[in-house]
Length: 286
Picture 1 (tube, rainbow, N blue to C red):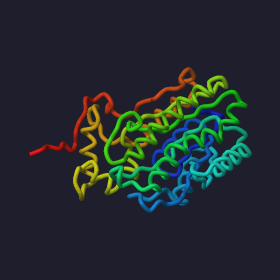
Picture 2 (tube, rainbow, N blue to C red; picture 1 turned 30 degrees about the vertical axis):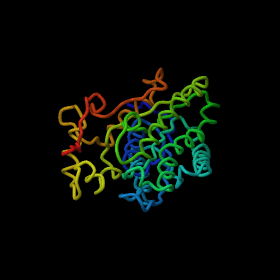
Picture 3 (cartoon, helix red, strand yellow; picture 1 turned 60 degrees about the vertical axis):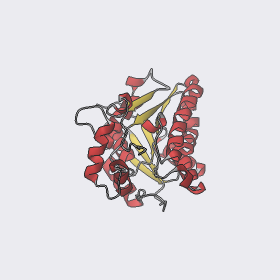
Picture 4 (cartoon, rainbow, N blue to C red; picture 1 turned 90 degrees about the horizontal axis):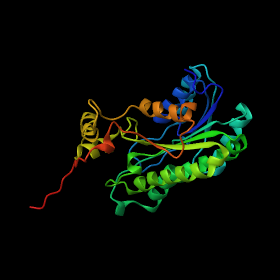
């Protein structure tokens, strides 16, 4: 199929993992791509952020589909970076039809141990970065009287959780950004939707701290992680989601098949949110 034939998509956090999977899916459906990633590091995270080599590899993967691909080292914490990436995309491709505001990070600790800088990083990248990306592409979409914005939220955008308050607050905020943008841009024919996703098998989760969190003990293993996530989902053989599962949802939202859909939260979680609940770490008083 060529559901995005002749269109151009800008994807933040596009160098690796979920962003790269979305880029490859969109390209196979006919889109030219601009990949944006910061290619920087944050020392307090349990995993490395994407590198310039990762970004270059993602470009090659998109080009292997036969589509054109640009890349920009740009940080969603900097409006100037995003504006420059948009300008380069318009100079080269002449249009931007789809924004995927995908850039994100996660860390785990009790809220009283989160530092001011750690809180700012989570909010600036996960939440405010989505606003900046939307702001950067809004002018060209309003002028064209068409466009699609897709925001990456989380099941933690609609429910609580322990030991990552900054992430939870940010992902709740992303849904607020999406809903406000959907209303403000509807008169221009621009659709805005969000993905509410379960755990995805990328380095954000696939690291030692992620293993320990799901295992409920130190020295957790990847096998503990895969097995533990089974308790969070309803579908048979369900566990952590491949990045392609999110790409499959995003391609529908980006396509004309969803032309009547805006302000929507598309849940991709293997049935997590319909579960009555599961407590991995019950606490009992003696």
